[in-house]
Image (cartoon, rainbow, N blue to C red):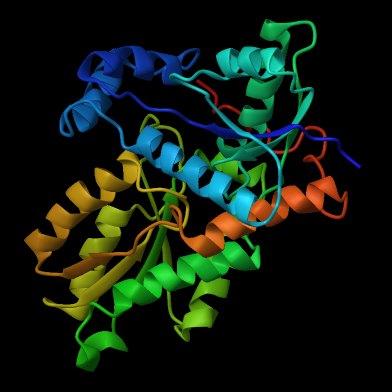
Length: 329
């Protein structure tokens, strides 16, 4: 059985001040052939909100909720926090954990679905950070994907149910349910269970709600036009819904691919998609992400307890979720 001295929340990170935005995006895009103008365009999304991403505050809320849940259930484990791309950076957190005497920790990654960027890249980050810290760096055991776990499905279903309740009752049964997730290169998606997991999770949520008809769309594409990414994109999909169902149609968006309302939810859905919906005279309601819903927090605690009892799945298999083949030039 694993002997854990802590739990580590490992996340993407985000800027907290306007001056952080460009250095943060340079960290995100390091080693990738992304034009500078694309970086500057994405920076404008952050400047729209004063240069502050909500993700760090949301992780602070998550950690506080986990600590309270652990105390409630008698789980005596401190919770640490490290990020891939911005402070607190993972290697700095590992140094603090080592100084505190942590030898081994369970790692909750803020990504429900398995793709290179949502799974394998975090494992690579963990390996790199441990190598950087060096001798006596804590061992890290990544908790598995939770895309089909009952706690996650129930949480998303409750969030969607709350959104559906905002649709007038006489129109509620006809509301179009659209799930969204981050688009990734098609080659990356096909090298992982990402698409399969998304369809399974959407189907489970829809079945729980008694909504057999639903659509999965993608958002936040950032690659070059020559590279195939997952489609349909949410914005053209809204236009198709308008063509098919006419003005005034009700659309409920559930960003199932995101566990908190961070920048790509606030900008790509609440700003861009909402603007397109107004232009098209669609009634668009966006469901909340899991955040610190009690069912979701309890699910994370259960995952830790399962690993401590060695009764749940362990690390991903070697070589899982590779980045996929790069397209020929």
